[in-house]
Each structure stands twice: as structure tokens, then as C-alpha cells.
Image (cartoon, rainbow, N blue to C red):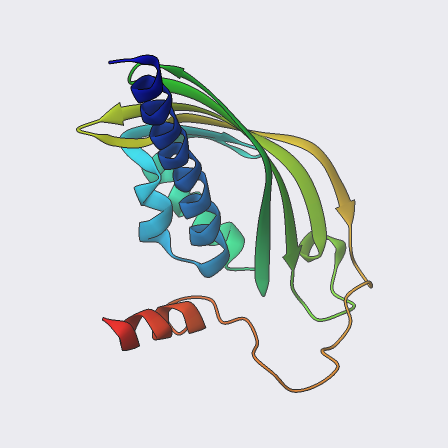
Length: 173
């Protein structure tokens, strides 16, 4: 391959890795456990605050955690990838807001955290996925008492298969 072909192949790989991170975040926010699972290889390992182990156990642990919230929203910022053939290191900055229990809900259900996802990614059978993740918590702040009610009627978050995105996808399929 020439230099241009190598550069284009690297861009495709980096985009595929970025989309793994986005699938994970979307899966968390929409309670789509299959989507979360698809971000990992079957033997994937996850290291999170409060959890350390195999991906299937992580998803069960996660299910108990995130379903206590009324919602979560993960924003992805800086994304850096170093490629090593069929392996890569991916570092993604994320801000995640969690809410529940109404506008004056408890601090444990209303907080925002800044984190970095440091991922060992592997391409297997042509697909990139996480083989090991370290979710490094950088900071957390309480948002208790800061949430306010919506100012008017309009679309609201629905977690799960009734979500607007899922419904629109079904209408186009």
C-alpha cells in the first residue's frame, strides 16, 4: 500500500473505533443492553468505579445501577487513537450527567462526572470492539436541587425501545 492508502485505512479504523465508543454511550443512555454488549468482544473486561470484571457481569451490574436513574446523558469530547495493527489504544473524554428523583432528588441520583475511557481495542473478524476498558473518573459534582421542570410541553426522553429514535427507525425499515 502507498502512503495515501495507509492514511485512508487508518482513518477508517479510527472512525470504526470512535463508533464503538458512541455505541456504548448511546446504549447506556437508552438502556439498550444489546448495544452496550456490541461495543465489547465476548471476553471483554471492564474496570469502572465500583466494578471490575468480565463484560457480561458488568452489564448485569450496570443494569442494577442505571435503571435507578430517570435518565443519563453521555457527551463525548476528545478522542485519540493509536493504531498497532489489529490492536489500538483509544482515549475518550466524556462528561456524563445522571438524574433521578425529580428536581430536588438526592445527590446520589443527580450528579455529573467527567471521565476518560481508556480502551484496548481489537479488530477481530474485521470488527473493532473493546477488549479491555478502564473508565477513569476524573471528577464528580452533585447536581441535587439544580434540575428544573420543563418550561413547556414537548418531546421528552424515553429510555428503551419506545424511544423516538427506535420508533423512527422502525417506521423507515
